Image (cartoon, rainbow, N blue to C red; front, side, top):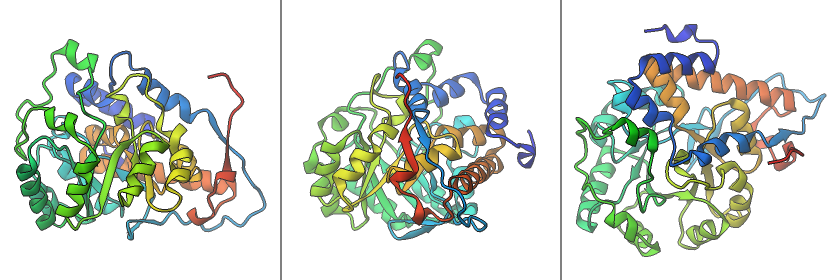
Length: 347
């Protein structure tokens, strides 16, 4: 296993993980649905935005701190909820939680983790958010929520973009079973409840828990507006990393319209193809509070476990700090939409 501190670029980490992680788990980590058009567009869309740098500004001291739901973040980068992390590295979500704490940020834990909320909370040194796949009835959901509350999680995240499981052809052709050996929370193996979810379920969740509610999987202004009309304090823009709907819009392309739609009534976070510090700065300029990373965190996990995830976050932060300096912003409060524009290139 490589010494994580020796990695000088994110590309090195990705290549190290590709050599280390078993093929099935690697394809699950990096793949997408159907033709993988959404997966590709997530990255291509980020390239369609360029900076409008300003000069002769004092950027000798760079400040990357921000907040999320009032919780301090050392960096505007959180670790997105991911399944099958134990097949990428035996420590899985335990390593992700420890790494997030070391870097002063937040780990989002998925319902389908190999580890229970209690196990992850026991090793975490920073805040945790719980991502809920609502697979059972209300009694099942309430029992799980009570466990999450008791474990000290700071927010509850309802994922709404999986009414039907996407056809991930890399996994299908490899006959990859992402549930092999999985333990953790007992989750009904059905999507019937996910497919039947409505805004009434959002209302039920708000009545059932005192935790702030995040709605994850928003893809446009209309649903963002509905979320804030239902009192949701965080709107999470995501297309599930390109793993659900082929030809879905790239999250970066809808940040501005979602931010305008919520009009300051909710915080906006986003994931989907963010693998460089410049990507993070673009999202913040368009109005996102923070970015969540999935695949990049998985690279670090596969390459060197907890230390690899820390190194990914360190390099992303270094790239972000350099991009901030070279665009003339010393602190995140100075970042605005004036910092970016759409490049004049053919899509």
